Structures are given as structure tokens and as C-alpha cells.
Image (cartoon, rainbow, N blue to C red):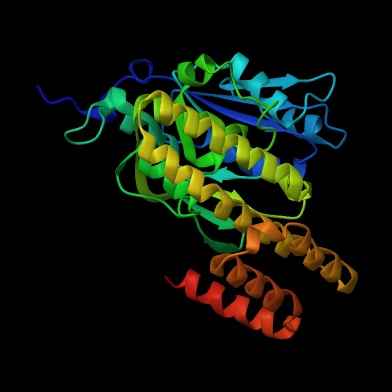
Length: 344
């Protein structure tokens, strides 16, 4: 018997929880929330947890009457990861996606990701899929396209995607990842103590390693926004290094538990390069103004151990060029690059 997937009653489709933790981000929240409620996949619940905002977030939310929407008002600020877990605690969906309040979904995002969990992929055991993720479009605060995330094949082993992540060849943003709610809950929720900046990566990585594989949709279904008020853009280099190192230790430990010595040794080699990339990226995003340029170039020397290699030297050279190249030339290069991206 052939089943017409689209004719199935909404109640026969597993519920998906779209969680939107928010704090003082009313300027972007409407777009995020509207994109969640406009999904072609109808059996959803949307949970918005306001983390004691002081802007007009609550007034904005009062305009919504959709019965699929649940609004939680926190009396005190729980911190970023604490607010994620507040959403998770209220989740009743079989599947869970964390949509940051400044990101937004394409209309078919939930349907296409959920369908992988529902129907699987050809010749592959569905139970061995730990997460489904998709290609993401990267946009700025105005919605202009900056670039696209890096993604992999239709199905990849946990070993491969973790190694590719530490090679900076996979872009796994919270908004592009769907997981089983029960899998995240089995971890005790998102770990904000050891991974305050990378709790999302810790979750999908641990689940992927446990299940064995991940699935990827080669289509732009989510939009990840980059801007100066991102929470993680205001964090120091040392904190990022600690988070990255803890993430590597966690994955190494889990691979060793499975007897996968090769993957564990690969990650041990990759974490140094991964941190060098992170340091350079943070310096580039922070280097604005003449005084700041000197300050953040000096940071390379504070963390000089990460640049004692040909790869590290090339990173350092790239940062110096980008910081000191005249802005008029840099802007022309960026405009040309965006034009190429928009026409691709």
C-alpha cells in the first residue's frame, strides 16, 4: 500500500517543537517567530521564552494569538543556556529545533527535516541517525547575504562530521539542527557549565556519536544572522578556547569509550588548529578603529603558541592584511564577493 504523505492527518504526524529563547531582541524576534508559525509542517508547537527582557518584547508577543504558540515570561534572567533549557522543559514535541531570536526559517524547513526522521534515507537505519541538519544562509543585520554554511553528504558518520567540524568544514548552527527531544533530555539538557558558549555543539555531537550518524539536506532551509550584538560576539578569546577544548575532550572521551582510537587521535591533532581559527576570527570581528587594531593584533602574540606553524602563520598574515588594508579596498572586495554570491 502506497501512503500519500501529504494526505496524512496532522495528528498522525509527530509534533515538532520550535523553541525560540529571546532576550532584548524585539528588532529581530518578529521575523523569527513569523517564520516558525508559517511552516508548511502544521503539527508544531512554538515556545518563546522571554529571558526577563527590558525592551518591548512582551508587548510585541501580545499581538500573537496562534494557539500553537506558548509564551513563557522569566522573572529573572536565566542566562543564555538556562533559557534554552527552560524551552526544553516545556517541549512536548517528539523532535526539537532551537531557533535563535535573530535567525529565521524557510517555510519548508521543519517539513523537510522532520521527513528525514519520519521516513529515513535510502538503505539506512533510521535509528542510527542522531540529528538532521541543513545548509544555512548567513545574513547580516539587514538580511543581506554574507555567505553560506558548509555542509556534508546526505549521510555522514559521526566520526567524519566531528572531524570535519574541527577542521572548520562543517557549519552547524542551532537553527539548522533537528534532534529527538528525548535524546537532548537524556543528556540532562544543554550543559551550560562546561560549555556556556558551545552547549548546542556539545548536544548534537554527543548525540551523533551515540547514534553513529547524521543526515544532511543539501538545501538552504535556515538563515543564520551575524551581527555585533550576537551574545557570542562579545565573549573573550580565553573563554572560547576553554569551550572548544572541553568540546574536544568530550568527543575524544566518547570515541575512546567506543574503541575508536583513530577518531580520538584525529581530534587531538585538530583542536589546536581549530582554536587558531577561532582566535583569528574573533580578532577580525573585534578589530574596529586604530586603537582596537593594535590591541587585537597584540592578542595574536598573547596566544602565539597557536600560530607556530605554516597554517598559523598564514592565518596571522590574513588577519594583518584584513585589518590594515584600506577600508575602501576591503569594501570593494566585499561588494564583489556578495555580488558573486547573490548571482550563484
